[in-house]
Amino acid sequence: MRTLALTLSVGLATLCWTSAIAADQADQIIRGQYQAVLGDCAGCHTRPGGKPLAGGLPLETPFGALIPPNITPDSETGIGNWSEADFRNMMKTGIGHNGVRLYPAMPYPAYTRMTEQDISDLWAYLT
Image (cartoon, rainbow, N blue to C red):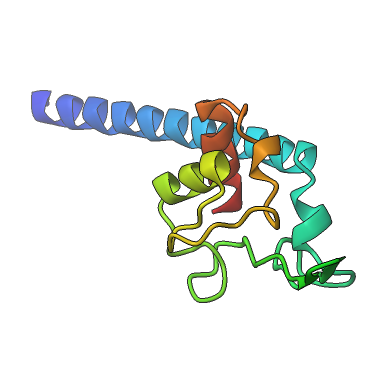
């Protein structure tokens, strides 16, 4: 009887703990979506009629057209192979995960004052 009670107690505690984690992750994703809207990520990273945040919208500049990349979690064409540290570095320095400078195409100076939590939330939403 004690074994059953202990097993049920551990199972219930685990269920409550995982539910709390899932709720925290859901809240983080919602906050990240808010950051994406505030930063107008879709304004550059979504072409008209295209998949949201999949890139492809040509931005005409005096230096030629800049094509914002796919920032979906796709591992082949998006940021699915990036780490959160890569993403954080890009948001703070304008240097991509492959070491390439993204400025002026990526206006990172506009995002350097984001808090660490804001960047983590945005990362959670995008991935």
